[in-house]
Image (cartoon, rainbow over the protein chains, first blue to last red):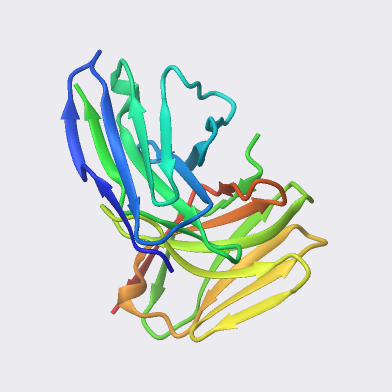
Length: 113
Length: 112
């Protein structure tokens, strides 16, 4: 399985500001994903980060709010823009293996005040 | 529309006994099912998976059963250990794009 790291591990931000979360993988992967887990909720896919092209967003998520970069096959960033308290969540990146499994990073715990 | 459902938010089991976690789904297009374990402040850890063309997959103490006609899968852990205490998520893969759809999770507590 791939080793995935995320930065920062946690942050407390003021409303109206933006935070960029980094995801680094120790091997080249084709597919990377960004998920959100709101307090007491399940994991919800935000978008699929495609290398060399724009990310593919799920219903309810838009690029202006959650811009994503994927400059190469080992790295991606997710920005949470113009934050509100409703954006307080754990943000997780994951990668798809050559099989069917997905492996997750440790997550970034975001609190918006 | 909740396509993957875990109807039991919590489960308590005695150490050494069997833990059975259940998951129901509605979308017949799912081709692969996975179970993850999650500790607080950590990302989900992959446990075991099963293809939609199989009805059972076993890995050590963990066995996943799939009943396609009932659109139901279950994870059996035997024997249960206190270290198994965590939140367990089932997830299903859409056969295009690789994205996963998760259930709400079941918090398992294994008592010594």
